[in-house]
Length: 473
Image 1 (spheres, rainbow, N blue to C red):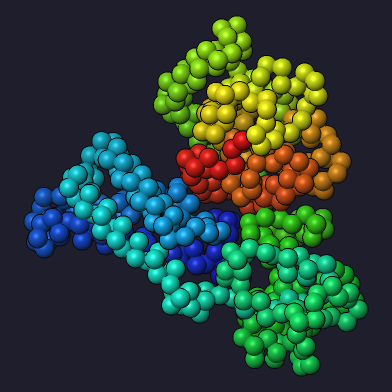
Image 2: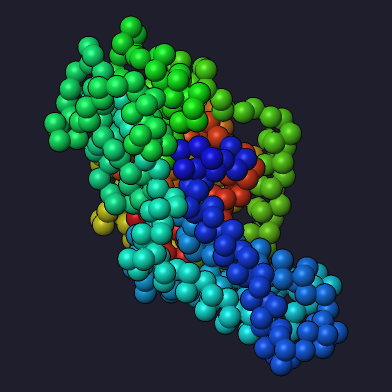
């Protein structure tokens, strides 16, 4: 465990989220047994004889239900909804899982589960998981959470890098972090309020042990000749996690802070894997998903095309083609359903889309909200110009300007552009240079830690973004 996180196939998952997934998985396994026993009045032999072996069915039930929960964002570390919203998402996630199981039974008949068994197991699952989630909203639950999962952190430094940590504003940012304070280092500037500074008048290792410090974040603006290397090494040797500021943000928030980076961080840290086999697997997933989605969504695409023609006239274009930039800076024509007026850029040329943009048509507003305008991009994926997961493709005009002003921006073109991506999940719709800078930090995290697992995790959480219209304009 690193900085209160568990690394799964290169992706950092907060330890409390990981444990919640484990606990709820066990609950889901047990609920299928409970549902079967309720239906057969406690006769285990009868339940097994009628339904079949319960263990494989319970494992499949738990996996599918947990995937449904994940698709509803129930394992997002920044979730801030109240109890009512949480229970609503639990219900939707379990219903999504139940529907998936019903469909999958026709594909894998050996895992048949009767409707009565499924309904009872789903009801018991809601009671079990709902109880666990409700406990998290009680003072007792919060106290237990703090005792088990919170990590005590000491920051070495009081300069600009240290201030970046202090500027973490949201309560969710500090959910698993108990900040002891900031320690001054001789020769460093001080921009931290005095009440946040802790005095250390003994060896750091002894102080950290006495204060039960779990993590020391080295946030020095200038380390040369000023970093207490020997003392930090002693802390490392006694089991205290010692990390730099960039690593702290990467593990805690899933982004790479470009304002805290030096090129050496990329050179000497792990990450940025390039595997021909992984790229082959990703391409296979793209092709299979493209074929499946086209076969499912063609009626929606046909109805959308008719709606655009009815609103704008039979001679108006249905699709909107625009040059975007993908892997290695290669331009391509992205395909979308037209959601703006035909003359949307005649006067001012290329510009960012804005909230409540007057150029958007009535039909366009609906299909943007439901993300239907993005469906034709499936054909871009099928042609190999895009992937389902990757940095969002930008227009060449914006790319040229952003590469001049935003450090490391060109690196996002190391992989194919994507319909969905880590930045789209973690940050709302971007419509300015500052937004592009912020989203780049999440794109760099994706590039540094990309894997097939992370792609699948992003696709799973994209379900929530589509159903609830997150980030749409």
